Amino acid sequence: MTRISPETPAGAATAASAPWSIRLRDAVVRYPNGVVGLKKISLDIEAGEMVSIVGLSGSGKSSLIRTINGLVPLSSGTLEVGGHRMDLARGRELRRLRGQIGMIFQGFNLAGRTTVLNNVLVGRLAHTSVPRTLVGAYRQRDRQLAFEALDRVGMLERVYHRAAHLSGGQQQRVAIARALAQEPGIVLADEPVASLDPPTAHAVMGDLRRINRELGITVLVNLHLLDLARGYGTRLIGLRAGEIVYDGPAATATDADFERIYGRPIGDQDLLGGQSAAPTGTPA
Amino acid sequence: MTALNTAPRTVRSAPARAITPPAKPRRPWRTVITVAITLLVVLVFWSVKVDWARTANLPADIARYLWLMFSNPAWDRVPEALWQTWRSVEMAWVGCLLGIVISFPLSFLAARGIGPAPVRLALRGLFSLIRAVPEIVIAIVILSVTGLTPLTGALALAVNGIGTLGKWGYEAIEGVHPGPIEAVKAAGGSRWQTVRWGIWPQAAPEFVSFWLYRFEINVRASAVLGLIGVGGIGDMLTSYTQYREWPTVGALLIVVIIVTIAIDLTSGAIRRRITEGSKARDLA
Ligand SMILES: Nc1ncnc2c1ncn2[C@@H]1O[C@H](COP(=O)(O)OP(=O)(O)OP(=O)(O)O)[C@@H](O)[C@H]1O
Ligand SMILES: [Mg+2]
Image (cartoon, rainbow over all chains, first blue to last red; front, side):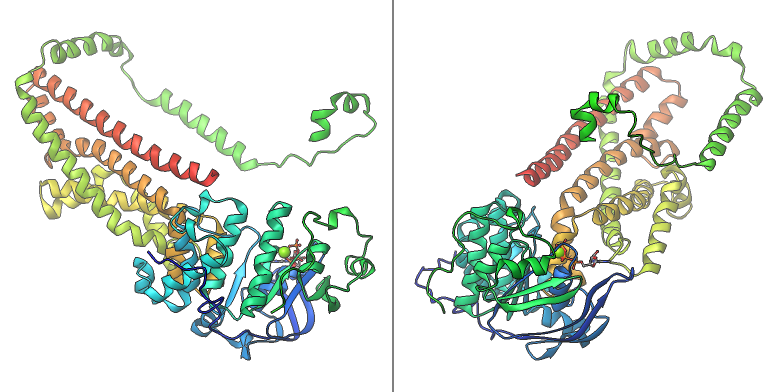
């Protein structure tokens, strides 16, 4: 239906909104069962950064990511995204802000029984009225954005396939396209490659790096493998027991730094290996 | 577990490492209920006055009636029987459609996470109340308003259908994977957008399968409903039984059984295709 030529300028339509910054002040997350996910965290992330977040299981990585798009509410403290007070937003305003923040999950979270296109169009729901949503009558511009997002991750030929027919790596690419279709200011990824094999993991991490460099989108990625964290992030944040215990450039973080974040010696299980994770391509 | 499977000898030869399984949960109520039901059954058999002598004649009686009905069925009644069966199937069909149209929105409102708690509880109560009353009783109640017409039968089936379809529906909705729902929420989707693109693509095959199954139930039930005189094959069957025209009754029974089995087989095959198809898709 819509052929997208490879010459389409990168990000002509998928980076319409400007990248967003993130500002957390004394942010506390206490779950209803009393567990404290985040303990008084203060953090500034500039627009356009690519941040790797590492920490042991239970250190609060998911809590941090999910706080930023309001899936987990703050118990106290403040959160600003792109200059908007996320922690005060409710209802329609909260949904509008979430619409500007793409989210990528470890389990892809696609609706397997429907098409790739319908899954990517979920990224346009924040801009689509409920009547249009119910009958699936998306506007032409929204479809166009979905096609472009799929083209960017190399999944355009699969647009009318069922999502469940795709491999894990392809499903994660579709999920990235769903986030890109939002024209987001921020993309959050919670362990996006934890269920993928090493080459596919590198390919998906490469996609995330590309959307950061080419579209300028702020990207936060939770990872538990330190070579991925070091190789793909420009900045590294280490969490332990809900607190930030490391914050610095990713490339120069030493094994000793990781041992301090993890509180134990690092070993082979903390490395993915495979294809070199060294930065490739030209910086934006 | 694995230790037991792979090295049973080690386990047997090392009785020193005694394990203490958790205490078996005590369920006093279960025992009380089991004893009570057993007593009840014994009491009932003991107190009911059954003329055991007459049961001796039963096999002979059954054989005699079977001979009367099926030795020479009145084949010339088959066209009328088919016509009356068609009326029964129509009753089943209309009842099924009405049931679907009403139960469909209600099952969403009754599902956890969609409808407000009071609405949810009220609907669930309504569904179980309806299911507790047999179609024939509902028909007798409706009868007093609408009279002896096939519509009465259809309405009775519709009401009963709301009870079963409503329950199956909300259970299917609550059973879907939470991942796609979270993805829609994270992209800024509203409640009904979440229902449409997070839940429905997952639950749709089950819903269609329930609808077909309900139609099968209705076909069987509509024949029974005819017994109270609302028309259709059941009505015809009662009349000829009262006239003791056994060859006609035989022909009618043959028609009813063949048509019911045919509909069951067809609908069952379609349902299997739907559910197996969706399973195959999930595995792919
Ligand atoms: N919904 C919740 N309700 C209650 N406690 C929670 C909830 N989600 C997380 N927690 C708790 O908060 C703490 C931080 O969890 P979080 O999921 O943020 O860790 P994580 O670093 O993402 O771990 P993992 O690497 O295992 O994903 C843990 O102790 C966890 O048990
Ligand atoms: Mg996590």
